[in-house]
Length: 92
Image (cartoon, rainbow, N blue to C red):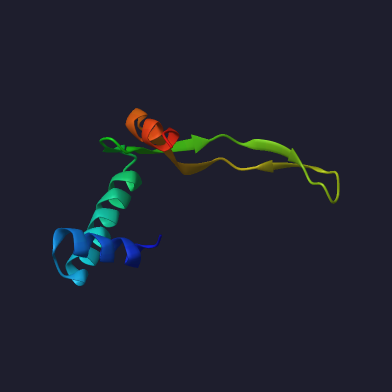
């Protein structure tokens, strides 16, 4: 499901215009990105938490040359699902 499909579903269920739901999704994403850029957690109750973590340098071996390499540290976004989301997905 992509952003357009989500906004169409929201528009139907909330009885609002498609562009309004699309704007809402864009704004929500913008707010989440801003918070993550400031290394703040984004907690969505009953869904999960997005947070920034730093991966340390990683020593690997190049499979083609067999030479050791170091992958530099970097920031990544980590998603931790809520217990509620895990339970809902586990139910079938």
